[in-house]
Image (cartoon, rainbow, N blue to C red; front, side):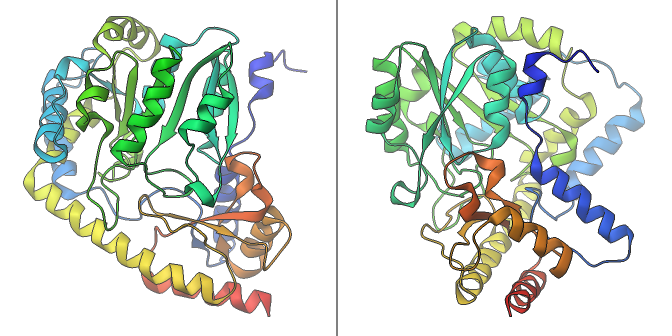
Length: 390
């Protein structure tokens, strides 16, 4: 038997990736699978980003960068906050990372001692609780539902706060529900964590993918921006369409930057050099025009899929305003979302993610359905699901 650490034994599989593996197996057998399971846009990386990477690699000067990232990229991210999000963020606070996961790892490694608790909404992104565990912390679930748009309230956080509570982690837009926190709501949550001498970590990985509301950041609030207890995580994966490039960033309070730099030096040496040079083109006007057209397409997909799912019996109590997910209540149709997901992929050729991945609060009542494929395929998936029921 392998000599596994307790840490490794406690980490659960990422069920959506195992579902994707099964989908690939079926496709290899000649089956047609409609993918609505993975949180990955179906669009190719924008051509200006690819061209920037090609030029850089062709030059041959592909070496380590500073552990905190290319200075030019840190400055470009700061300009993006200023020009598009009404936030003044010093480049020195911006840490370029190996994906948003790298940003979360660095923030948790810098702040979490064994036994420290982090409060996390349930349902929520599954890797968050496992990363807390990896640093010997304790992930404490805050059950949330449609009544609060699947977001925690200040009163709930205050009531759950304990002697070992270290911080609160929230996401806007959220995964798996696509719901948002507005700036005032984030500020109210910060009032609680600040009064409790804790930390607030805001996951803005899906920033830019919002519908009917403008993209926003917690850092546009002057109090949150200047706070010494607020971290913001972001990514080039979702809005910028760079999932496989594995690049993200962390905005940290100034007092933490040097400590995080030391961790980054040891954990990663530096983020991918080609990915960073490619990302310099992500903020160009031509690229942003492409990305905004894609956001409009995601909005059209959302508006197509929501009524179609309701028509065949799914309950969607809170409509998503961001990301590209619908968190659907399947209880009018089935008793167990995991069993339903297995039937969907095996019998209907539709891949969707059971709520089991996202926590312990009513997971078997929910499926996460991603609208990351074109509208015609989304409607075909609905037809297949309806036929399976019949």
